[in-house]
Image (tube, rainbow, N blue to C red; front, side, top):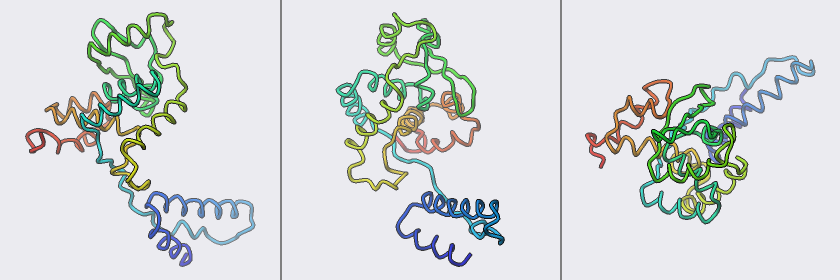
Amino acid sequence: IDHIDSMQRHYMKYFAPRTVNHLIFMVATIFKHAIKKQVYNGINPANAIDGLKVDNARERFLTLDDINKLLQMAELSNQDVWLFVKLSLTTGGRVGTIMSITKKDIKLDNNSVTLMDHKNTKSYTGFYNDELKNIIAERIESLKANDTVLKLHRATIESKLRGILDALFNLEIDKYDRKNRVVIHTLRHTFASHLAMNGTSILTIQKLMNHSSIEMSMRYSHLAPDQGIN
């Protein structure tokens, strides 16, 4: 136990808490396997080590200027990458949610889209403006009902988009800095942040983000205009 505790304190100097916790977890897994195979008869010492507190909350969101730069680079990269970014920033959907949008999910008459939250296994409604409506209408015209709007493979879109985000926003940001690094999930965070800054109620943000609890939406309350953020 003392040795593992010492190892944890050592790696805390070099790695993020989440990474250190993963290392301790791997040690625990090794001991668990050894006990199961009866090659080790003691207790699992890693179980006595408390995990480090991990602050996963992302604070960085994109400004309007950031968004314009991102869209310009995304359009140069690939039309599907550009459309993914637009849908993400317009609906706040997670990656899997955006990738699974099909023709039948699109409602052109009221500028809405049925979104599937694969994390909560529930569907909810998102909205888009007339500019995006025209682009979507043209995109889905020749599609069948169950065809996805985005044709590029998810892994390809993620790879291309990560490269763009790193080039635009992460050149001087430590790779373990979860608060300030811009990642694909930042698009969802940006959607909610701009809703709050524009005076959208927390209850509406909860609905549009499909948050399971109001507490998850309250993290954006400090951005509301009446909190001094304009």
